[in-house]
Length: 254
Image 1 (cartoon, rainbow, N blue to C red):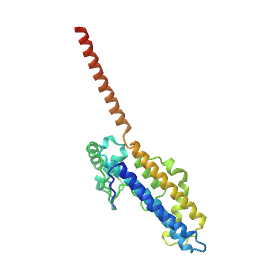
Image 2 (cartoon, rainbow, N blue to C red):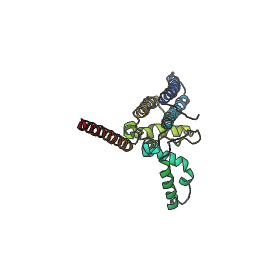
Image 3 (cartoon, rainbow, N blue to C red):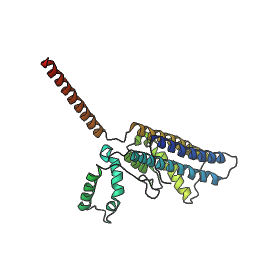
């Protein structure tokens, strides 16, 4: 399903709905694994589903956040550079995949520079489509992929994922890849519960961070905002000086 967020309320509602159905499925599957003498294949199936919800929510929330920023019709120059980079990559996809030698030609770099210069004055607009979302997980949201996503969105990787990077790679994705590819990987109920608890916690945490970033408008380019603030102060001061000068001139006439 394509994602189109209209405003902050729409973003909050979409995230709430996405979390709701995921947690329902996670809870239902967890309940089946706790049934006495439940077969091991249910544990393995539930584990793969847990990983799918981990990946799915990160992907959905990230793209919903980009869609929200896109809805605000802000010029690229007013946003942090990584967002114009997203738009640049989508609009210049053929240039990023132009050769097989591994060496990017200078002429290609020049085209990118020219396009980027024009792009800065355009509004940031990204269409979130199923077949080509700006944020993707490569079906394997390991710590490197998560670091790339947080870098693009200007989120704090250390706060979100760094402390559990080894757990994500070794205890979530490694078993998940084995099970999903038909390898008979032993899995204990303690293993399942550890990942179950982490997935629920990171879904809540990631949702919280995305909402905070959206409300605080952390996506804005601070240097551009500061420049505008300084300009506004200068304009205000000049107006005040003009008023003072007029009042002095009038008082001199009386």
